[in-house]
Image 1 (cartoon, protein in one colour):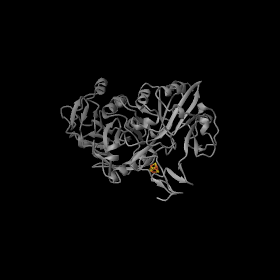
Image 2 (image 1 turned 90 degrees about the horizontal axis):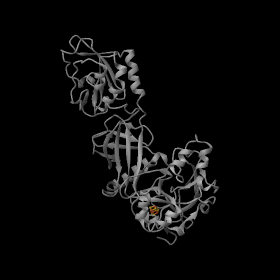
Image 3 (image 1 turned 60 degrees about the vertical axis):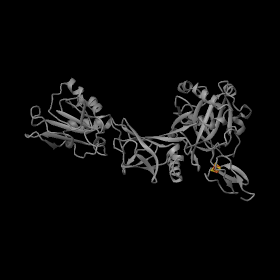
Image 4 (image 1 turned 180 degrees about the horizontal axis):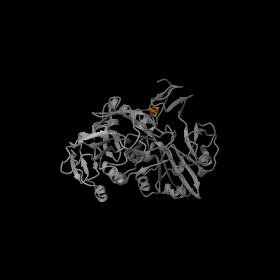
Length: 488
Ligand code: SF4
């Protein structure tokens, strides 16, 4: 390289960058011979939020003119703060502040996470794919389907195996998918032998081209329990079709307690307990997450000793999206009829009780590695301090859940962070903001870089690439205890 190129040492790629150019990740550039972090460094400002709590997050963001409202109203995030690599160097910013007369310190760095991924919750009844099926982005394996939860399908994407354990294309596709999902962008994922789903944090999922509207009110059995009383007297039998647990009113405990007489109905599938059936059909994207379009296909013949001509039967799915009404003829075969007005209300009530369907994206990262060496010379002490709740971990100022057990493995809801909080490096790995806030005395006790602590006012100069952003009112303020935040 020519003499005018400078080397970026913020990650293992160690780019040489010519004047006016950027490095491989577009995060650093050579500006007149100086290595500069190109994205603005984000500072959260709670006073702005107090002034007008209905202003959407970020809308009032603008360059920071260096004005400090007060130490306790300003929080320096790691977004755009830069990285120190290798990690034995102190973190880029170690900021002191005074809160309620107590000296606090916040250690701020953009961590490079090879051990990271996202957990995705997709609110849908539709079958997206079998457990353990591979999830692909741009034809590359980026994760897998995990369990179905109550009205949602979970995906696990990323992780060190997809980032480093496959070929270059797999690692790059994984990193791109994670980056876009964490930055709130829509990502199309295709599940082997399953559905194509567009996932975007905080938005409704789009499954095979259809936007999902509702998550289920409950399983088939729970739906019977919730609405049995509203059906009593208006209909003789109700079947709530569900891929997991289909409910039958007359056999269910709720029907028994109400005195609903036996109807002679017979379901295909495996009877679990009275009124609860498993495996009535194959998983699919139709009625209750099954593959059936004709609800009668899950019924066997009615028992002629119990059933009677004119018996009224409602079949409905767990979201109320699918429903049909039948009456038995003289031959005891169901014939479809128009849904009576008094049952329309109960179907509408099921729909009303369904919550809107969303995608949730939780970033999950392991900060228990070398990143800790940028905080203290004795890394395990940071882990212990987090474990003992002396150190608060935040991700771009947003709260995190730290997993119990060893290390500092945390999860954070990406919608609670400022926009574009994440970056990447082409190793490939994700770059995520992380801040550690603790008392100055505790920081000294864990072997922190006390000589590198600087006051907030030292970075409060105008025009140095910082941006202040309205703090989210529903996030706990990182500089005070949760109890204090609650009081306000
Ligand atoms: S990829 Fe980015 S962070 Fe890494 S050395 Fe190049 S410019 Fe620096």
